[in-house]
Image 1 (tube, helix red, strand yellow):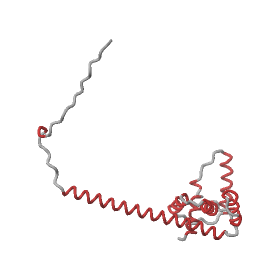
Image 2: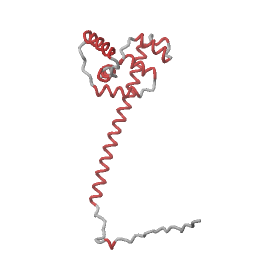
Image 3: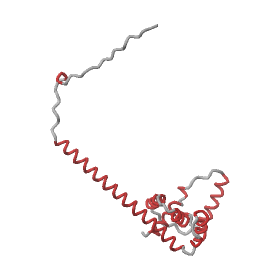
Image 4: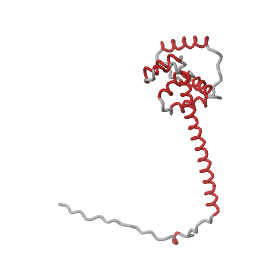
Length: 178
């Protein structure tokens, strides 16, 4: 699956109504129900979603440091805004250059490259964690094997054979009453 498909999948997973906040008023429930009914009638057939990959993309998106690339991806893939609207928001809110719309393809490609870089770092981090976990399990098994191969230390058979313990007693000084 290429990055474009993965980002489309991310948008579908994050927009899933099961993950959205609930309505707080009865009139909002009615408005939401009417809106959803209209959307269902006009909706295209549902595309399959890879939920695990969608949330992996979401975690990677949260780690993007470039605010313009981050918001461009969010507005384009999650909110499904048109390129003109995305550029208008980026110019007004985030100080992007007014020529952003003329260079839309380049901006989108740069944002996708940023996401691919963050995902590759995430994959490398996950692979390294698996290797460390595997090595620590192997080391624990080796330590257990060496400990079980060593003879048990000699323990005395009776309590009298144990070394005597010193008991420290503290005596209180007499109090002088006036």
